[in-house]
Each structure stands twice: as structure tokens, then as C-alpha cells.
Length: 174
Image (cartoon, rainbow, N blue to C red; front, side, top):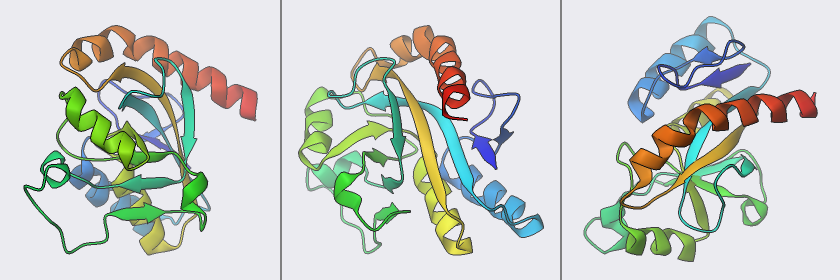
């Protein structure tokens, strides 16, 4: 089953499950309870913390849920904030999910220091739900922007082309 966030990021062949981790967690859980898919593939756009380039296509099977304040010592969490659909996380491109978008390049560098390269608001929730149902899962992302002060404007400028590149990528992979 191919899923996506929805609203401005919809694909004709994908089921929209919501924007942000809470909507995804609720909607994808309902979907999986109604019909357990054999595989979940989340597709969408992502921001880069600096090393991945605009319009790079990145596949991943691991995500983190780290808030910016955690990286500067302003918070902690008792939860395991890494989820993976693979046993070898060291070979994965880690995608961070938060309901907030990073605009600070100093914070972006801290994510890179932890080997986290992309930011997508939904992916962590996708993998957590998939894991709870025992469903294999993965994600395909196209980079639209860097996580900096111009990130939102760059995202808006590049989103349509990035979505087209995802479709082309998926057609090649068939």
C-alpha cells in the first residue's frame, strides 16, 4: 500500500493519511485495522539538513522523533525516539519527524552530527504504526529544500517538481 501525507502533497495512486505525526498515527491505525496491508510505502517530500541536495531521491527505512530543543539540551525524552524497519540502522538514511520545521542552520548541523539527514513531518509515525502492526515499511522522499530560514519558500517553489520526480522514480523501480 502506498501512502502519502495529503492536502498539497497527494498522488493519484497513494492514500493520504494526514499531515503531522498525530493525524498520521490516528488515520494510518484506522486504515491498518480495517485492512492490514502487506507493505507500507510512504512517499513525500523532505527538507535536507545540508548534505542531501535539492531534488535528491532518498529511500529510507528508519526515522527519529527528535525536537530541536533536545539537541541543545533544553529537553529530554523517556521514549525510544528511533524506529526502524531494518536491523542495520547504520546503513540507513535517518529521517527526523517533528510537528515543527527546522529553520536554524546551526540546529541542522547538529542533526547531521547524529547522522540524521532529512526532515519529514510524518515518517516517524508511519514507521511506528507499521511496527506495531508488524507490517514491513519504507519511505521514498524527494528533497525540496534545506532546513534554513528560506526553507518554506524553497519548499513551495520546488514541491511540484519534487512530486513529479517521486512518480518518475517509482515508475523506474517497478
